[in-house]
Image (cartoon, rainbow, N blue to C red; front, side):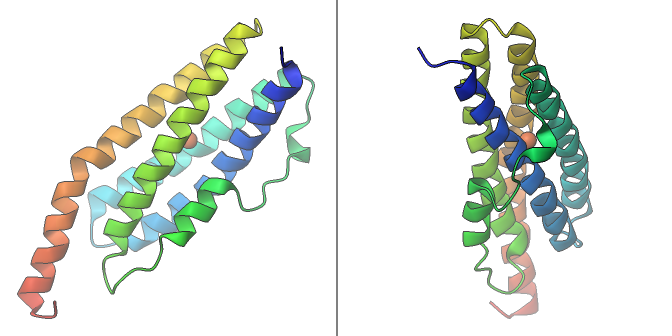
Length: 165
Ligand SMILES: [Fe+2]
């Protein structure tokens, strides 16, 4: 059976992922100027993501790992997200919503794996933290799912009104 090293590695990845996502979410919030409710939600989720990063750091700390030594260079999720940034004029907010949904889905999978892994290794406190974060990511994914239709309609309508698309 794999040991705590695997759990540490997964937590390191999660930490780097959250750090990268804080930057991405802030950038996306700037794109959403014309959609105040989206902007607010993205800013709120950026702040929550920062808090998630510090909770993951706490888990690393428990395992004797120094979170400040974790490399937070461009993570997998950030790569996927920037790969989807080929926006047509004005549709960034729609593209961002797709990327955000993808990122949240990936996070959900990561925290599900982490919580099961931590539980299996008897690290109940880490498992509980990961389950709490998992619930937050599920809520964010649900928010994107619920708001995507109106974002798409608004975008198309704005184009139709301006006669530019
Ligand atoms: Fe997150």
